[in-house]
Amino acid sequence: MTTEAWEAEWQPVIDAVGRDFGGGEVIAGADAVEPSALRRYLEPLEFDCPLHHDERVAREHGCADVIAPLASYFTFIAPPLWRPGNEPVFTSDERDAQPEGLGSRRFLTGLEPRYTGYFAADFEVEPLLPVVLGDRLSRSGMKLVSCRPKETSVGRGAFMTWEWQVRNQRDETVARFRNTMYVYSPHAEAS
Image (cartoon, rainbow, N blue to C red):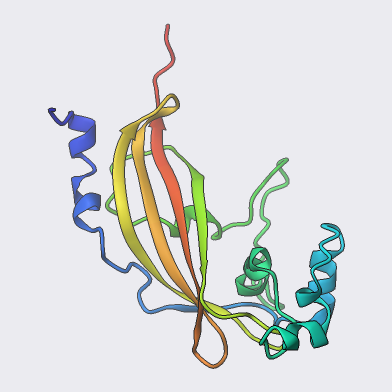
């Protein structure tokens, strides 16, 4: 099997697999895990697992307190979009405008060949310890764990998988997150 020129352009990224691009940055979540936030998370889902709202049941199952559902972790590791005194992050009145300086652009090495699009392709959470009421979460690390060039129906690019750690205020790793982004350039329109 021969490597095409577009695939070879991804070699610097492939060579960077295993490298942490996080620069040692620790990103703290905006808020602690607290009862009101858990209630608001659980209500629209009508998620009635007592581990997430009944302290007695949580303790009977060996937890220090009510635990946050895995799916809610992103709620508690997300930094604030904006803080008082900062410049605005919503700078466009366009429909579906995104905040400036945020989003999936973090999941890049700077070594990628020219691309014009990206989207999330996969996401995994590896739980290690329960997250309980009062915990304050942060995330760190941006390790590139794989880069697989592939031509798909939408274009030519690569599936890039990243891993980072989620820690509580005691510096215990409570989870590992992995996400895969497809970074690509669309196929040229047929004329």
